[in-house]
Image (cartoon, rainbow, N blue to C red; front, side):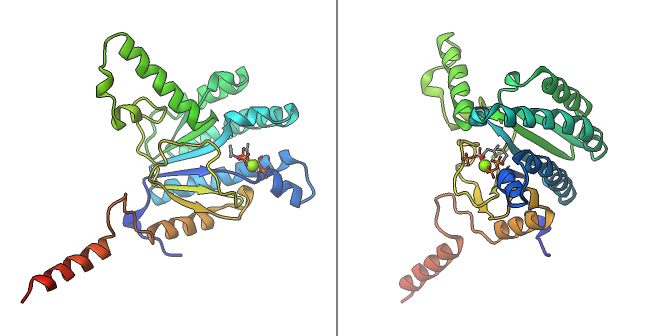
Amino acid sequence: MLIEQGQIPKHIAIIMDGNGRWAKSKGNIRSYGHKAGVDSVRDITEACAQIGVKYLTLYAFSTENWDRPKIEVNALMRLLANSLRKEAENLNENNIKLETIGQIDRFPKKCQRELQEAIELTEGNDRLHLCLALSYSGRWDITEAVKKLAHQVKDGNIDPEDIDDEMISGHLSTADIPDPELIIRTSGEYRLSNFLLWQLAYSELYITETYWPDFRRNELYKAIQSFQQRERRFGKLSEKKQKKSSSLYVQELTP
Ligand code: IPE
Ligand code: IPE
Ligand code: MG
């Protein structure tokens, strides 16, 4: 499979969806799907590091996911803590830096400890930033940024008129990370489910029917191939059309 080395997205974000349906299709309970999903996380993370992606943000648990049955939430918490313990060393050996966005303080203490340890262990790494979105939602992120800015206005440190796009970006949980060029959602759902609402403004969308536990590196390469065939216009005119219209314009001027 051919992907252009020069055009690898710097930041890929993924909504890892479909674990429950994957498990059900195999006659198993939902948590079996979550467990299998961890193997996909490992494979996709390693593949991203190998091909030169610099930032990978994975939607692992949304603010709304707290409203699932307690038994599922607890299983997810256990899986998170166990996976972190098992995978931290592997991440470190692969020179991958672990980060998180979201309300980590809502997680059980055990998860918070495992997260903290893995983050500290991988602190000095720089091949790939793996950012887990945990108890995250885009609206929460924007709300927090608004609060921070409101406090600064109240304290007289900024003038409301100075608030611009860049300042808002700089107060989000992703302040130090470039916006994702590519957002992938698995399991065929055509929605953002409150993921990086601000940051995805101009990201290219790639939706596949594949459930997350079946999403492995070949699927990732397909998504990148699709991305590389897109023309990103950012509201401007097409490069191709521009050339065409400018050559037309020249024709009109020529007697
Ligand atoms: C995604 O899979 C994982 C999380 C949201 C934690 P789901 O658990 O949403 O699986 P489906 O969408 O019900 O199949
Ligand atoms: C989005 O999946 C959240 C994560 C993948 C963590 P959901 O399964 O929670 O989203 P909806 O309910 O289908 O929108
Ligand atoms: Mg789902």
